[in-house]
Length: 254
Length: 296
Ligand code: HEM
View 1 (tube, each protein chain N blue to C red):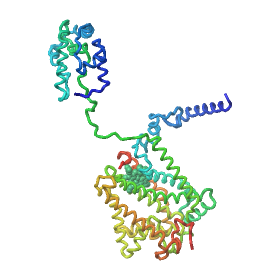
View 2: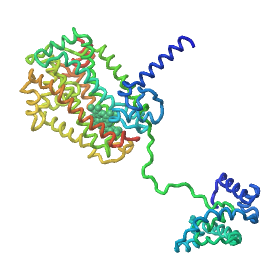
View 3: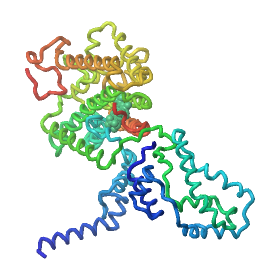
View 4: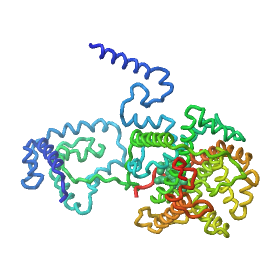
């Protein structure tokens, strides 16, 4: 036996010992590819999902036409994924950001003195634009497939709420860098809300925490942006995904 | 004539040949009516068959059972109308054939024996194919089975790839495009033009047309939004194929084209004082995206 073969065998043994050990078995439930003895069989393929936290999101089996990329274009999944990316980068940004008069300086420092600060800020910002776009495209895909029809009517309603929440998340985030772009874009947007019939003035006052954008507005938008809207959107997403499954999985084929 | 599959015919011919001690070809010919049926001369199997029911004879038979044997012959032929005549004939033939054989050794337990015994002689004669019933479920399933595949790996792998591609794209974008950061916020200095975030620019553009009747824009917007939520309850057409919902498709496409046009105008073609500009002549008056190709 050559040295190479022996090395190989030793490594395989060690890997088996590790994957079959108590630690790995305690982390990964039966059927996981990370456990010892996983073989590709229909039974194990079911277990990968069924014995996994993923089972909350995916059923064991899905319609064949639904997995064709050309049907959903994965747009709903990407909306969700962008939300995850935004959550991770957003939490990271929170370490360096104070929603006060210092906000602008904090962003400047983030960009110039903190490792990867600029990259993470860019990812958060472009990711947010991308999410608005992708959610919109997802809605268009759903419309063109007539996927909102019975029994999926209510999921469309939830979807429109998700779109609004996405826009609100993006809009509240827009103010946070506290530069001229931020304050005036939000002023224009907030003023438009002021033209809403009947409750316009109240909505605008509530949004600005006053008559115009100030640091009070900044704090308000910050809390809404990092806590309130994410919390609400996660709840609606949970219901949205749950309904996708309960309504019989992906619609179609056409 | 029932269309009997060849392999079934072959099997019953073999069985018949074995029972009667004749060749398979002969049995086949008899079954097809091309040759006279072989007359049975031996009858040793009778004993074999009689032995099985004897234990039951020791227990006193329940009285109602005695009437059972008579209709037994009929009950085994619940055959479709079109073949009925043919089949009863066959059954009759069988019965006549074996009558003497069955009558010869009359076992005392005969009357009390379970039903099978009565036509057990048939078994002894041969196996006969009465009819072939096509395999059909009694209940028709309402739902067609759905063609499904395992989520792992058929859905999860593409999802993973999409996720990785999106991450790569986002990191690439973030590496080459710097997010804008203008001067510090100053409520006293209004930039000209002041633009909303891009997803509101279509609305801002519309507001600029109907400036005096701003409410005339916002009312339809709010009402439209509520109607949009209620859309599945308004569109009661159950069809999903595009060719059967032309109006809905047209409606949405016009909406997309309109919103897209207004947004592009708002982003690229509006400059100071919300006046019309050409981005290739006057530069881009939009600080959010494309901060990196600032003309001027
Ligand atoms: C944060 C935003 C959203 C997320 C994360 C999200 C996520 C998803 C996901 C993962 C699916 C599974 C199928 C697919 O990927 O296409 C789905 C389906 C669906 N979504 Fe969304 N969605 C969002 C917004 C919306 C919006 C704005 C609408 C419509 C107004 C909508 C309506 C629907 C409907 C009706 C389905 C079922 C489609 C089918 O069965 O073919 N969703 N969504």
